[in-house]
Image (cartoon, rainbow, N blue to C red; front, top):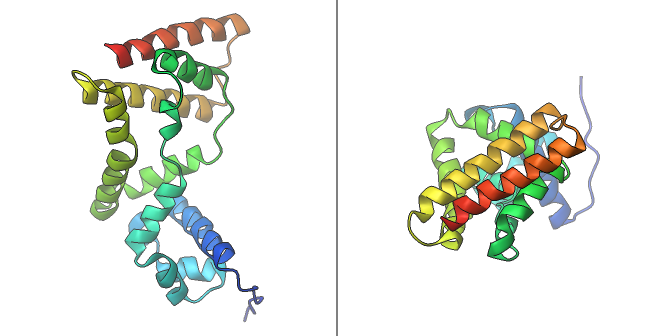
Length: 189
């Protein structure tokens, strides 16, 4: 059986985005070692050489997928004195972040590969933990940044996996208040 691919208009930005989305789907469904450039190219309907032209290697494509998932830099936007309140409000009342669970699947499926693990660790260190640690500053900044980051990530993933916290408005408010204090304390002390 033969499939004829539709010709797509030449649009570099749209083609790059289509490749990135296909790679994202592949890396969230299969491990890093199982994903091939030819598979991604076939999903998009392009020649594998085009992926190499846009992204270089499979490693660089994987890095682009990780970067497309975001870097969490928005957590340091706003006054330092209100960090705990802002983050607690976002964690308790904020909308589900599209793509967060897909990002988690990418990490979980690929972490067994030594190459992918090194890329994930380098990417998270350079794009999130080091800037966050620098922002936290002071004694034990790395310890406080790691604790706050892990706490927020775990709570956000737990919320998204379970579909919410399933609490009354009063319980949500109590959670938000306590969480704000805990997060602010991690940042300040």
